[in-house]
Length: 220
Ligand code: ADP
Ligand code: AMP
Image (tube, rainbow, N blue to C red):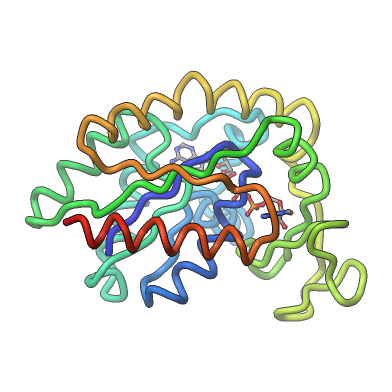
């Protein structure tokens, strides 16, 4: 399956993607994680991306689309993928359509995670991620690591993302509403959107998501 996950920052896209990707045997492709890996390795792309990420702005389309395309062309993504954080505006969605059409492929579903803004703010404020791999995500109250400050998955140090500060989060939410939300209508016009509530325990949200994706697949 080829799936796009959408939802505001802090909705739980990365958390759900980890389980969904495993259940569906497809890779989880997060452009945010790809940028953070570039920042850790101090690449030119990482330096450029950081200057936008720290302000809560979108990294320019040209580099983002090239990076996402390159990742989607890796052998492990041949049978499908779960995109998290991409596309993030209508131009990126159009570019993705062109890329897929070139390969005679199409998206199967766009899973829209709905969470009220006050909950999103609480989730982001308590988020802690692993220095070794930003896909290892914890929360100080909702998903406590066994040992404070230490990643359960690999023993790495947990830290708060620079862009999870209150001011940057406000900007990221504004960017979400103005630039990313319009892709929901873009995909609704293609009949691809399934919306679920992302409130409640992580496992319940995963179950809701799997049921919604199955319904969407059965309808095809
Ligand atoms: P996104 O990828 O959408 O920005 P994350 O998956 O990083 O969001 O989740 C944001 C924070 O909320 C993380 O700290 C995560 O542990 C926590 N979280 C995710 N899903 C839930 C949930 N269903 N209930 C409570 N906290 C959650
Ligand atoms: P995320 O990890 O998805 O919360 O993304 C963190 C930051 O990375 C965003 O606030 C953007 O600055 C940048 N980013 C991630 N994905 C994209 C994208 N598709 N387009 C532009 N910028 C992105």
